[in-house]
Length: 389
Ligand SMILES: *Cc1c(COP(=O)(O)O)cnc(C)c1O
Image (cartoon, rainbow, N blue to C red; front, side, top):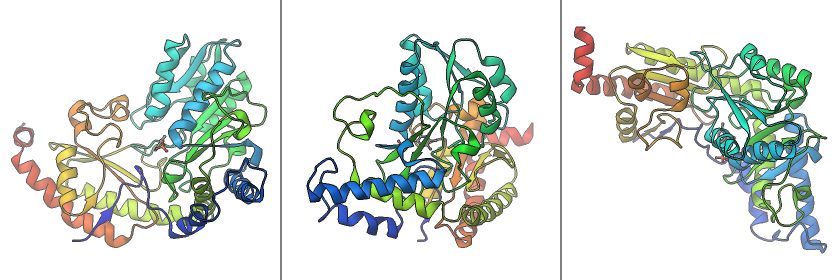
């Protein structure tokens, strides 16, 4: 059976070149980069080279890159670290209702520490309004965290317009760019952000490693205590093979963003157009301002989980809602924040394309999915009632 992986928003396949770059650091190059002897020094050199690659990819300086255990830790460090560092200046944080749980839940935890948090609503496309952002700002606002690209519906947020406001008001701005790296251009200067999170496994790197960009001069308190690694902001012996893999992966992922985006956009649009022909199918997220590889669709009268399982039996991997929330019966918080009724949210599927997807993959999905939808709808009493009324 043909196997088609269209769940690149959950994770991606490690590039062979990335794996090759990592292997020596599991073998002979095993030293601790903090050691002063030759074993440590050669590893320290690789650590700093990876930092330079990560910095170059987002137009930052190497000393502004802090390696973490992934996107989740980078988001936690950004929100907790900045909020606590600036506690004396104010107690208000602004975020959006459609953030990844790594931001959303840490913001909720900050409320318990006494911070006030505004969870900005979004429009039907999942977009935050810069005007609403401006209106939410108070004298107490110290930090904002608004994602660059949404992991579920692919909507791109107007970060440049938001950073114009945060700069004017002296507010620190963090963005979760985990889904953006390699898919759209990411330049911290142009975006005007002060902190930015990224995770290697979302751009064909290894799992369990990420980074937080912190603009020079931005105060961040540590959230873990220990040694002096990562300028004391993120102590603990570094995941050297992972970091080397992140460096190689980000170099490859950002070498030709327009080329990769064009490939993904072509496949995505073919997939969307083909699936819309089924009928009673709606595209979720912004029609244009979206990730090139994201196609999130709602299929009326069917359950997303049923579609997912039927697709899986045909060798196709997609996702319903986000990987983190699937398995729970609550529909996606992102789709609900976009004003979607519960039933429609339940019938949603996300296809997230990656660099290894081909046109044949898309053709295969277009071959198998219409039959699956038809079969499930024929069994659904809701569909029959819907058709009558
Ligand atoms: C995957 C993801 C995360 C979490 O990253 P991990 O490396 O899995 O911890 C955070 N934010 C977004 C937008 C993501 O897509």
